[in-house]
Amino acid sequence: MPTLETTVDGIKFPNPFVIGSGPPGTNKKVICKAFDEGWGGMIAKTVSLDASKVINVAPRYGKLTGVNKKEVFGWENIELISTTPFDQWLDEFKAIKDQYPDHVLIASIMEEYNKDAWCEIVERCEAAGVDGLELNFSCPHGLPERKMGAAMGEDPEILEEVTGWVMAAAKTPVWAKMTPNVTHIEDPTRAALRAGAHGISAINTIRSVIGVDLKTLRPMPTVEGYTTPGGYSSVAVRPIALRMVMEIATLIREEFEGSRTISGIGGVETGEDAAQFILLGADTVQVCTGVMKMGYKMVKPMIEGLLAFMETHGFETIDDFKGHALPYFTTHADLVARQAKAQAEKRAAVAAKAAAKQAEREGITVDDKWDGDDFVQQSDDLVSG
Ligand SMILES: Cc1cc2nc3c(=O)[nH]c(=O)nc-3n(C[C@H](O)[C@H](O)[C@H](O)COP(=O)(O)O)c2cc1C
Image (cartoon, rainbow, N blue to C red; front, side):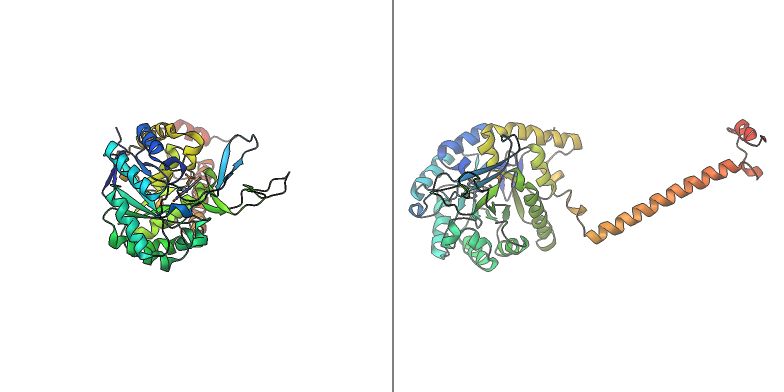
């Protein structure tokens, strides 16, 4: 019987399904609900020292649906980080860890470009008992106006410096969460890992405009007639997330001796989706929008789906198949060369078969070809007419 238990950066997860930072981890009540339903871990909604600067609007979500208007492929949000005061969060972290000492609670943190602020938020979250930290270098809207979130994630130099501050202060494992809104995900990844981050979380949302309302002619989500570009998530982003996880895993293998970890995020809704992220090098997977669409109970079929996949292939642990698909990426030129070779081999095999058939049709002309088993047939073949 396979097991989903896995230890990542020293943290023991009962399964690799972690709730990604966002509404599903926005207070103690919902975090406890997630633990009760069987989630392997929880990244709380991103906190900052001064929540009074965080002001949300409504509406702040937009959906991209299929023709039946029911199936949701894409989801845009212009939501900011947590509006809950930091002290209240610290009380909730403590209370959650008191109630669920064996469950994994990771704080997602974000601050301005200020060393003291980063050190303070790290130390106070850790003092409240969290098991690890995720650095939000990736929120694509609102916060970049204050040089936070993606503004840092898009600048490898600043990201490396800030991660360095955190690593000097932190005692628990640290994951740096990447923005996909960069040309090469390797650049910020390398910067975070060079500064000592234990792991990389990827991806946050992709900068987007979900659509334009054809009645009002205004872009959505429309707030007092206006909008601002937001962050795109859900199943539509999964192929992009898979590509970036593959690139991050390749970099970790090539430049960091495989010694860092990955939490794969983006459009995960099933155990099979999770299997694909793990096959490309992820240690855990995170789910955010999926929970907003389907509720906390979705983790049960996800667990069953991943176990069934492992049983089919005879894998006992997550490590048995982590990164299994990575060696099968190559250049397009190499694909062309491999295909030319395969086609040449196929043609040679067809030609050899045809030659053998032709030789058969020509009949026996040398005595060596007589065969005991086909003797009568061979004799008949030599009969004229
Ligand atoms: C409504 C909403 C709010 C989010 N808030 C945060 C946040 O506070 N901090 C953060 O790091 N990511 C946040 N995210 C990003 C998610 O954690 C995740 O990286 C992204 O949505 C892709 O995963 P998904 O397709 O499973 O949602 C948010 C996503 C959504 C949809």
